[in-house]
Length: 477
Image (cartoon, rainbow, N blue to C red; front, side, top):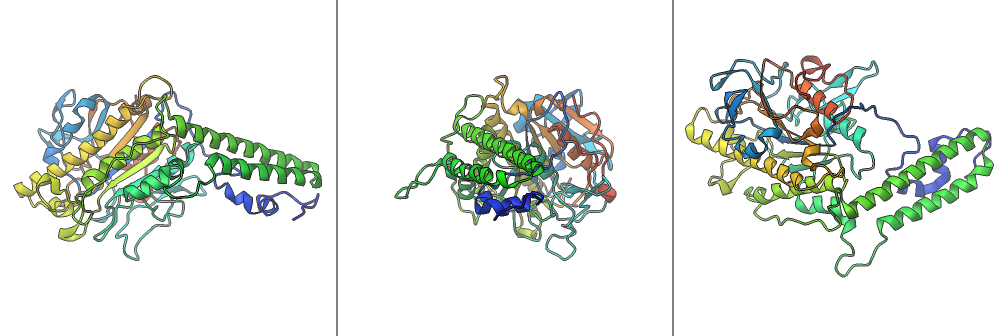
């Protein structure tokens, strides 16, 4: 294809001129759109969203004592060693009991079984943010999935930089019953797929780093592929240049500069994958064995720590700066949710959450939450063992973890006293090591605060009764 000297050089005409080779660089954006990010003195470099459905045993979740002198509850006890990196977003308390509609509380009616309702929004033409107020039931025609991306995807777009993936999303038995645990939504509002098996996660993240498969044929390395494609594009650019007007040559030079920036980013990523951060190599990541029958839920005991390994390694290898892990799915009657047979019973979480005050179910309810808390603490252990790239501190010091729940108490599907906590060093952004007792508070404000912690400016989020136009005050250091 030959371009006229009087033809304006658009991306479409350029790609036609370049041919199919241009499509071999999926990360190359010749006309890049900037994403607004804040410049802050203290900022988190990584963030993890950990979602658990079906609420908690409230009597076993909140600390005892006073905000100035408190003891962690049984469910929060796995975080004892990280008490100075724990920010508990609690309700006001009357002795050991939460007060009325205090704490994180949804301000709008929401369905009893659904994914976390405020993890969706998209900037509108008027500068406001449109969001998804609730999903009445994700399997009915009442879905409102056209409203835009989730907060983690807004953050991912802004902070991806030279990372391989914008985000990595893992799901531990995330589908079943009447509602899957969808928490990640793309630009058009449709749920993003998650990595649900150890094999899929390993292949997506490290397949290109593992060398030639047994009995297989050696393939081109990522570096060789990059070199071959970009060499071709540079050659095509050179042939086009004499046919263009001065204005279009200036545009073409801008494209060449973008290509050079892209090459530098990919080369850095390949180097990071080989050397890791902080001098900790990740060219040969360790693969934890996953065992147990998926039909009984027994595999969850080893699949969960495997996924936590993958999150820590992804940060270490600069594969991503944003990750999510969802635990089970809400709903599904007596068969719904995660099973944990290694705890000595096979009742699923949704069944247990409808405890009706029964002491035996409440005890099982707490034990399941304690085990999940232990897995989040295990992720903190992994991050704490990896030095940061700056040479001071660890990846845990640079990471924000948001462990959150859709319900307060699963028995009544309550929308108040949400048992949500922020963990990690957060890059010094949040003042951690505290138990906050808050009045009735919109959870959407926390989401804006999390985006701000990652250096991303989100002026408003959500809509109708769930909309917030500011972060939650009193969280930052």
